[in-house]
Image (cartoon, rainbow, N blue to C red; front, side, top):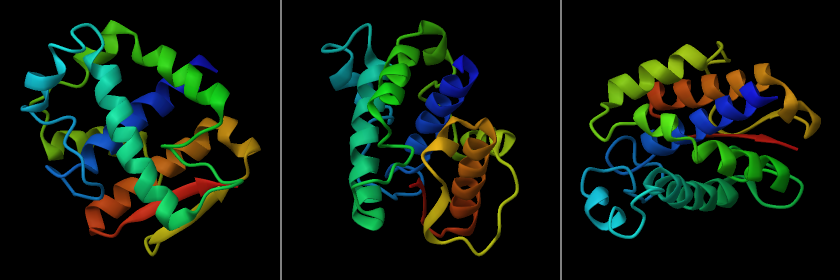
Length: 164
């Protein structure tokens, strides 16, 4: 179970960063740019990664919710409360911050995402149902989510994987 939350946290960070303005611009945020350190460090000196992730999560969740809808659906940026709490705890691990240096390139981030991804159908665009709420506990489903985002970024087609 711990590996699952580490993977989901890692995916949220990778995809959150890749979706920002500096990379693929799927959501209008810039929490992981070099300039963000200047305004976040004085306010969040020990928890900058947590603050960055919370900011990008909110920006990405708004875009996902517009496309998928809200209700009995969940996605990488809006999960059930118990999963959100586990991600919050995982983000407080200082070792995680070292994996996300501010100078990471788009290609480096995509390569990391590809390592987690499993092949998906190439025509996936827009909202894509990955499985049920119970499937959110399966690591393989999250690897499928990684594959959908990876393919979306590579093909320049927005994709919004969700569970319902």
